[in-house]
Image 1 (spheres, one colour):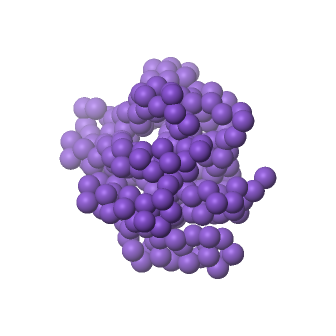
Image 2 (spheres, rainbow, N blue to C red):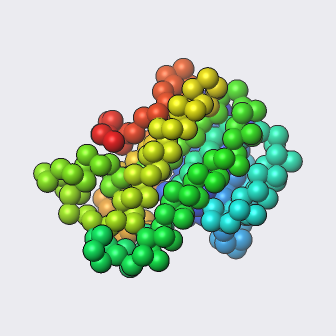
Length: 242
């Protein structure tokens, strides 16, 4: 199925999963806006998708900068008048992150600022545009590491992955999904947390899935039609416990 005339903003979309999500959305006719803080990389990514015959454009966007976020919202409003899909993909890790007793506080603050507060700030700024859509979709790029159930299960393969900054940021992002989906229950906007799986990217250097494979589930939720659900936390294997 194609989705012509729909407009999507993908944050952190100049590489990795974000770029692949943008590509797959573009392949079904969605106009994709490449949100990136680095102009060179953002323009290069948009040009690469355009060269493949997709409709793509670069939108300068630093999710930790309020002025940048406001400018992006104005640019989208002027160019399109609405936003149909928001994918909160921008995220960071930090080598100074670690267990609660050892993690560098400045690193934890940086991670939360980008992974959680950045997603919240972008969502707030884009809500007026999403309200202009007949079927708004917000996809928050989650992680199994953000599950309290997984973190507390000694039998989980992720039990020993004690990165207080990163894990807490993804748990907070899940709270955003829960509360925003409730707040928007009487609208046409739905919100879900989607964990792409263990994808090998520049962010981690680890994983067993390609970005192409990891993008499939977020794209599926970005394009949900009659099977629409909201307030869910899912990964490729199914629903994930909060």
